[in-house]
Length: 149
Image (cartoon, rainbow, N blue to C red; front, top):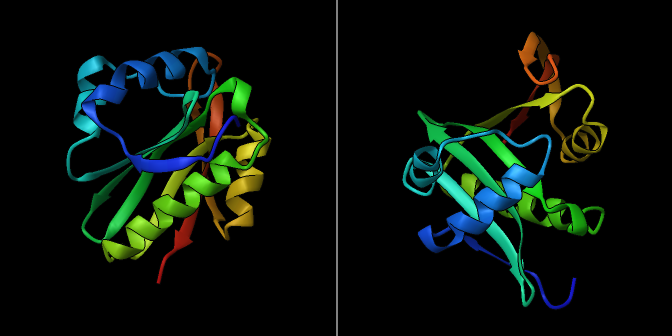
């Protein structure tokens, strides 16, 4: 990182950079522009991590009825393995706790060992699998849960 990392709410001005980053990464959902626009509105918590060089990561969680689902957490290829995902996830969890969310759910590709290790380090537990959940390539999803209270 070239400067101090700042984690802040995602804005409409960030969407071009976020969509470009998402397109460049293999494990990020392929959402429409409209879906990205909706993701910065309630009931979502959408955050970006940036430094003087620009955006390096983003995360989006959807909140409903006291629960949340982590839709995506991604770090640009050139910024991975620097602790940015850990910092971003910490802020997401703090925001969810502030919103009185009781538990956070997520799905992750079985082959995404770095993400699984990160989630386990935060205390997420495996609750099941979804067979053939992902496409391109077809792969199972690992379901994970983190109680927040």
